[in-house]
Image (cartoon, rainbow over all chains, first blue to last red; front, side, top):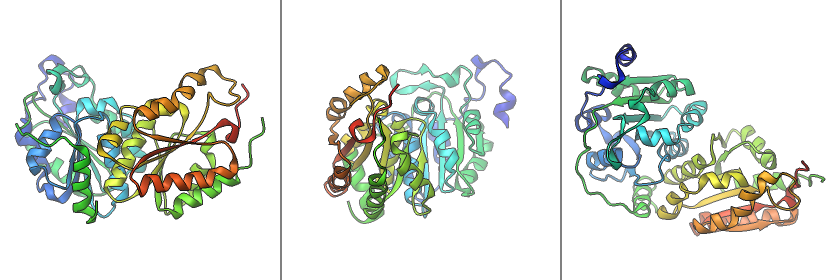
Length: 207
Length: 172
């Protein structure tokens, strides 16, 4: 994989952070209506709120940092008939990286995780995260035991990532490395109780 | 001290399953051994081993989005690991049920267990979780039955605290 080949190069140059999330995230996900989506706080919540226009099949967080991956696991276990996508940032995933181990041992086939890794805490002023300083979340996912793991850092690799998150042979993890640039500008609702009711109404026909 | 008979724990498992609970999230704990073992052996249930208790809080919220019911089995020390994640439960008005096996409580011999054990009720109350305490085996099933109604019918956040009077203190 390109990222692993690039790892010998100077981290400061960060040659793998070239994709723009505003293009790469929609290209990787494709038809978003095919998934039930949990989006972690900050950048990825905005990516998804904009992409789905706050669709009822997406629950976007604005707090509870570290919760997106285990929330997606609970949803995937509850709904084996549906494909569940967790999309979250490097900062959010690092806060509760043990969730990768919890997910890996169960390996639900209908769960895919995408970590949009810009190497920074964008929401708080673009301070560098650990992934700018040598930490490889794809290697951590693989080490946790998630077998279908891939790093996507170039446009030409996105199609392979898009296939992986839809395959369904086991939990998939895609590390999508992007430039530290802004997610789409979109003003979304921030009431989680309303989001819960909307999501359940659409999926279950009841609040 | 003697461990009390675990008969009530089998009753609790049957009650939880009868009332539609399918996801059993846990960090391994002696006080919940029967429930954990029953969940692991039950093909119709999902036993989810966590690395930290806060994962269980988010997991159960995800289960609720999908129309499933779950319970978080943890020790009192784990309550401290859940605090910020309970923002999801309180802000989202998710139903939430946890059974907490208490340490730092009645007859505790390990001083490390007291700070969090004694903080369980004020910390949970501060995050909007209602605590119900069980001290005698005959109270266990009716209390958890009430907690199930409060959580999944009324949509509340409920913690059932299983005291060391009930489960026995570890004599360190």
